[in-house]
Image (cartoon, one colour):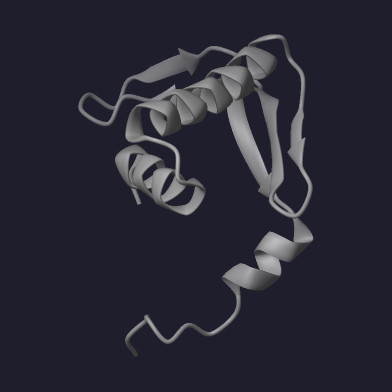
Length: 98
């Protein structure tokens, strides 16, 4: 599902126009992004939590030359699904082919 698909689903389920739905989706995403930039967690009950995770510096290897390189410490966005979301994701679906 793409961002455009989310906008279309929101527009059709709420009766708002596509432009308004796109603004709502963009507002939500920018709010999450801004909170993560400030180092805050974003918890959506029943869905999950977005948070910032610190990755320590480490040694790596250039795959082309084999040379050892130092990979610097960095912050990355992470997502931990909530219990209800994990349970939903584990349900058998009639749409998956086996």
